[in-house]
Length: 320
Image (cartoon, rainbow, N blue to C red; front, side):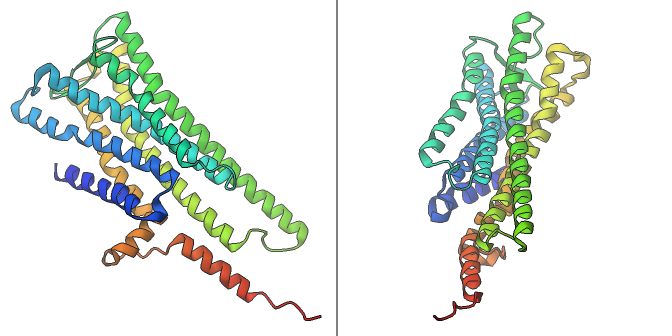
């Protein structure tokens, strides 16, 4: 419980507060990070409900309490998955096309709206019993969509939500990151070949190298969060598919409860991973909270200083 509270406060502090205060963090890319933080906070809001349910050994609020719990989990889970895909798309565009590929704030706003619309169908449909329903699971202290009922309609629903909330986002993320790494390798190869032809060590300026290094570090952070997403949601996806199509005798209360808890743990870890590794967030922490001992230089200041030093080291032109 204390870990959840600390993680929630850290998520608000590092993603929301610093982005709102610092001009260097007010970018379209960080809008996606804030959106992911909102979904993570929604996931963490389930924890007080879980504690109350565990204390009373039943669902507080009965069906209404079950629906509220499951709606929070559905919105945050599906929304977080597609937001990770959007972040992967943004990293790919930024790094592969640094001049004309960056997403502006209007486009970022539309993509954020898209993530919420993406999360709504499989949240609203079971909540209002239009298709599927929310039922207790595990030790009957948590709720999720029904994947145990033995009828064709439930099996089709489980298959659809599996593809919609897990397969499609994961396929998009894998595609964008593979394209990103391919573009980076191609760019480096082209620069090396051209440098050999011109008999120079490198064609890239120090400023360009520093800027690209920062973007690649951010991409690595995003990829780490994606890896945590896989670790958290793959066991739960296995449980739901087993419940609908496999051997249900394997799904004991503890076997269904552990994957559900893993999904909530990732929402606690995300803010720590991002704040610890993101170069611009670390630089902002160093500037505003130097007592934390982060020791990260401002990437923009480093680029400017390096460029000035490079220009100053060049010999003056010969006088006519």
